[in-house]
Image 1 (tube, one colour):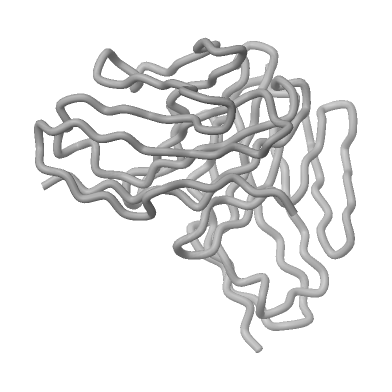
Image 2 (cartoon, chains in turn orange, cyan; image 1 turned 30 degrees about the horizontal axis):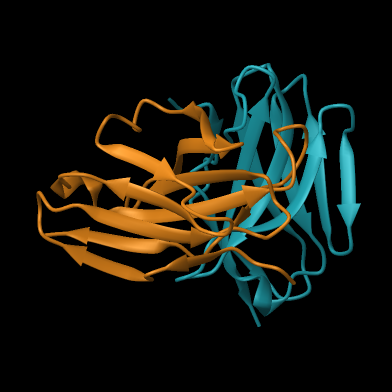
Length: 115
Length: 113
């Protein structure tokens, strides 16, 4: 069964450094998402991406964050100047179509630890 | 922002019995609901969904019930198996939430052999 893959599985970064989290969505999916889950808290939406542009973003997704689809397969989340509170699990997801009753399929996540 | 709530952080059930996981929501515009299952060190795996035009959807051992008037949904697992032990998240989206899903905080299910 096709799956969403994320790399790396664990990223340790010094505070203030930039980090790029990578995702390969399911190949025939058109919509891509990033979510995060801070330890002990709920999964929170960050951003959705369609047709090479952001379609929605949450309040969490401020100027520190950016997303990109640099080629036909990868979808990346960049965090500039990381802060301690950015430590979380970051999940990438993709779906075939828009919200219209399409489940989102998640990768196994990248655990980001900011020191 | 607690639009989706799972008030039971954990649940233990004997193998073979029914597991009932509950979820409440506050946004009356939600019209699509999903259950995800999550094992440690893995991402959420889609389990079953229901749209607001239905009140029940069944897939094998899993059935989701939706009570729109009570803004409540539940997931029934019958019979429960030890491999069902995981964290279960409900998620919802609606016409006014675009492409994002709102997740509950999860219920950790333990099925005791």
